[in-house]
Structures are given as C-alpha cells and as structure tokens.
Amino acid sequence: MVVYVEYVLVENFLLDGMLLYLSLRATRVRPRRKSLFFSALCGSVFALLFPLAALPDYLKLPFGFLLVLLCFPWKKGQNGWGKLFSVLAWFFALSFLFGGVLTALHGVFSFALTPVFTLCGFFVLSLISIGLIRKLYQKRAISKYLYDCVILAEDRRKSVLGYLDSGNLALKGDTPVCFLSPEVFYELFVEKREGQVFDEMKITTVSGEKRVRIFKGRIAVEKAEKEVYFSLSPNMLSREYKVLLNARIFE
Image: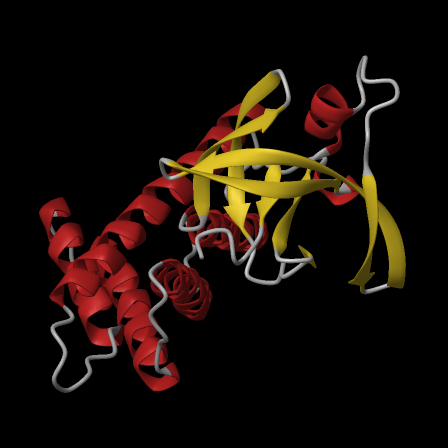
C-alpha cells in the first residue's frame, strides 16, 4: 500500500483544525489563529508518526489534551481551567461522534474511507454541529426569561409558559398588554364567548401601526397576580412559550 505523506498531513491538519475550532466555538472561547494552526499541525504530524513509529494507543488521550492545551487562549487574571476542560470534553465527544458516523456510513454503503469522502463528511458534520450549537445557545439564552404563568379569563384559567419580552412595552392606560399564541387566545377569549366585551388599541410593529383587539384578564407569575390586557400574536405558532409577557409585568 502506497501512503502519500503530504495527503496524510493535509487531511489530518484539516480534520484536527475543524474539531478544535468546533470545540472552542461550542464553549464560546475565541481561538487565536496562530495557536489553532500550530495545534492542528502538531495533530497532523502525530497522525503521521503514530503508525510509522508503532506508538501505543494510550498516547492518543494525553495527546488530545495537549492539542487542546496548545490552542486554548489563556487570559491573564482569569482561571480558565473550567473552560479548558469543557473544550477538552467537546473535542473528544466530537471526535468520537464524527468517527462513529463516518465508520457507520462506510459499513452501510461499503465504500472506502477515501480522503475526499472523509473531508466532505467532516465538512457536512461540521455545518450540522455549528447549527446545533447555535440552537443550543439560543435555547439557553431564552430559558433565562421563561416563567410559569397562569392566565385567568373570567371563569377560565390556563397554565402556560411565558417569555419576558424586553421589547414589549405596550400599555393600555397604565395596564400592561401581554400577547398570546393563537391557540391559547382562541381557547380563552374566542371559543364559545359570543358577545364578549373587548377594547381596541394601536400598536407599532415593524410593518407599521395597526389596531388590535385586547381583552382584560389577570395573570399569575412568580406567585404574584396582576391585572393585564391580552391580545393575539400570530407569530407565536411554533414557539415553546405561549405568552409574551410585558416588560413591566413585575413593576
């Protein structure tokens, strides 16, 4: 079997670079390009020497730690050990995940793990990983502003998840206005409620000013109950929360 040294070096340089970059990004650590380049280069040289020098398998684990250590951006006056071990955990997790997926595809479709296939597979998996990491942090950011709520509308009540929206400053007089998802709004204020009294107000959106119907009710959040107005928000069909809380709900 003929092994082209330059192909081995380039392939492993790109693979290690991808894994290290994704691991740093997953922990929101901004990498330094030179450190990342040098660490990936060390990984490619190790991948070349590993079979040629018949090195023992147990060296792979400490060498992985070394690669992360080489590219980790230490900052003066900050204890970065926690972040370092988070990056290390992501590096090994992604390495096992990517390797497992590519090996499984090789077993299913029965083709050789050529350099082109490996790089293309890593590229696709990297794009998927970036998307999932972004979604993970978006969900984590939203979860900080989620609250368990109970909406009370005359003889009806419903427990929902609410999101404290800092951009929702709508008021009717001095009363805050909260916005409900269509299914909750329909259940509480439309279904079998012919002739129910409502009010109207103007709100400003990205598409301009418009008039909306508002219904008076009460909402219980954080063991406190408050009188508010409710209106319909058609843009909340696929959200995990069902009510946009007014930014002044806790005042």
